[in-house]
Image 1 (cartoon, rainbow, N blue to C red):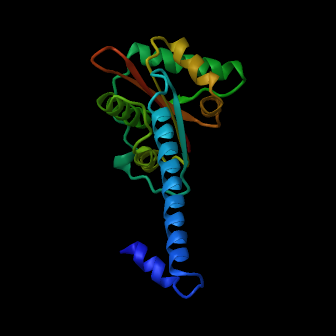
Image 2: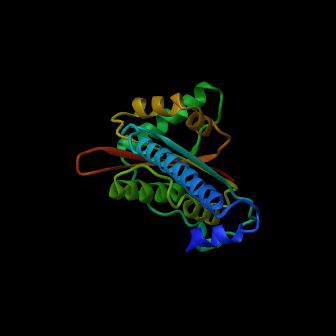
Length: 205
C-alpha cells in the first residue's frame, strides 16, 4: 500500500508508467540497502559494548545548584560500619591527594550509605553502572548541603593499591579523585564468587 501511494503521488512528475515503476523499485532497493547497513553497524556497536574488560572503572559527576535547606533530622549522621579494607582504600586515596599537596577528604556517613547501597546494587545486577546516580547525588545534597557530587566505580580489584592505580590510570577517574571535593566515602560489596564492586562518592559543600 505504501509503495502504491508513493507511485501515484509522483504520477504527474513525467515519464512513462514503466519508468515511474522502475524509479520506485530502485528507491525501495536503495532504502533497503541503507537499512541493512544501519542494522549491521548497530550490531557491531552492541557487540563491542558487551565485550569490555571485567575489570573496569567508571566515573560520573553531577553539579547541584539548589540552595538546600537542611532539616535537623536530615543533618543527623547515620551509624555506619566501615570495614578495614574500605578504610585502607580511603586512606590510600587521601595519601595520594596529600602527596600532591591537596587537602584530605573528610569521611561522610551520608555518602557511605549511598555508596554501600549502590555497590550492593551492582553486585545484584552483575555489572558496573552509574544507574540512579542522580538520586544518590540528590540525597547527599539534601542531607549535607552539597553543591557538587561525583562518583567513581570499579570491580575485581583485590587490593587498595590496585584499585587506586586503576583509577589513576584513567584521566576521567583521576580528575574526579584529584578534584576539588571536601567529603567522601567508599564502600565495597562482594558477589558470590568474591569479586569486589567499588563505589566511591565525592562531594563539596
